[in-house]
Amino acid sequence: KVVPFSPKHVAVLAFPFGTHAGPLLSMVQRIATEDPDVKFSFFSTKISNAKTFKLNKTGLSNIHPHNVYDGFPEGHVPSHPREAIERFMYAMPQNFRSAIDRVVAETGHKITCLITDAFYWFGAEIAKELDCKWVALWTAGPHSILVHVETDLLRERVSNEVSDDPSIDFLLGYSGLKVSDLPEGVVRDTENPMATMLHKMGVTLSQATAVAINSFVDVHPIIVNVLKSKFQKLLNVGPFTWTMPQHHIHDEERCLEWLEKREEKSVVYVTFGSVITPPPHELFALAEALEECKYSFIWSFVGNHKKQLPQGFLERIGNKGKVVAWAPQNEILQHPSIGVCVTHCGWNSILECILGGVPMICRPFFGDQKLNTRMIENEWRIGVAIDENGGFTRENTTRALVSTMSSEKGRVMRKNASELRECAAREIERNGSSIRDLNTLIHIVLS
Ligand code: UDP
Image 1 (cartoon, rainbow, N blue to C red):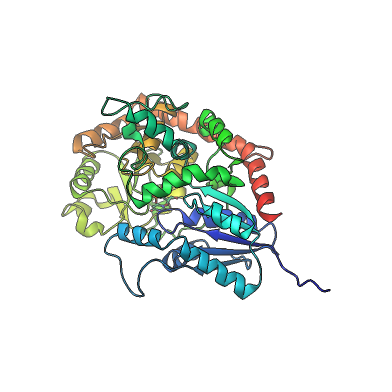
Image 2: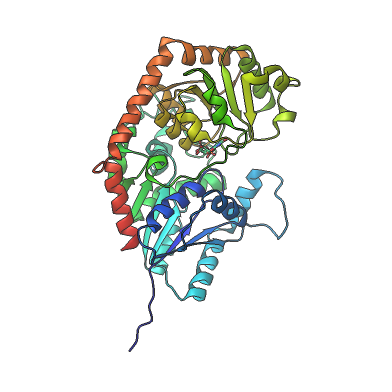
């Protein structure tokens, strides 16, 4: 009897918002180069696939994008990013399930491994049904995934507290941290789709064959050890900037050329990631502080900077600063002229700052950003926080700029960041832990 050739077939389920699908695709690219005979079907929404595959030109014929239903009738434009996320979450997991079934029926190749964004707790169910392995990718840091794994414990302990803002230092590795530092939905504000998803994720991830994370062991060895005891396999396969293929961002505004003319550590880089624009009064305060200080700056601005920044700002700053729609951030942070990064503390930006040895001024907004800020300030000592209750004021921003750019405190933060960078470098040496974990990941997915 002739058995028809059936290649290994990996289904990849991406979360189509924020900086999630890009890192997942670069990890898949890295794995896919190891065996061109293994097929990868990459599922995300039409918008997300168009953007992600345009940026990451894979050049690999064994990765195929497939669009899943985004929750909207054809042609409907969501009024707010939150609406897009919520409608998508109502459509899943059925949208993924039916797209996988369609691809399997079309190709005749059954799924041998499922890779999902760690958000997707239903990966456990689908993998069981398909009788295959499940690998989850957490695109942020170890300290932020552990609070979701420990959500039931946190809720129970905190419910007995009388304080408005109880400490969470009963968790190993979180000394000095409080409930208000946790992502929304862990202990408070628990009745919304995002909070439900993260809670379910926390209780389900132990069923994954492996949980991969864009991080390295020395980011927080204590928390990494706790996590290892919670999962079947925790694989620290980052920092992705060094371990996974990176896409090239076209430098339309010639930021890098402009930086060449600046002195060492004299430039401020401002970014709030791919989705956040601070509220108008904070944009004004930040713009004022940047205008008044002596440092040059590059500001990557989400939105319409011509309309949203103070009138005459761009004319007044002239060649002292550049405001751009999208910047080659990673290359900028590697440039010797950068002295500090003003950031929302998204995990990718933090790793890129660490690898550039650049200290941070932190203005967290939501999700893991506050937790990241606390780690930056208290644990790694590589940045300062702007008080998130008031956000940017001209005074606190000026103070933070001077302290990180021109004081001994800033020099120490820069040194600490460089030391962390050295740890990361050791872990990607030939026998370093990130490389060993990456080899394990490749083996799990391809075997
Ligand atoms: N980024 C970039 N150019 C920009 C702004 C951001 O290349 O002008 C990249 C940045 O290098 C990082 C990602 O977008 O890799 C932002 O990820 P992060 O986790 O910091 O924030 P998120 O977008 O998820 O809020």
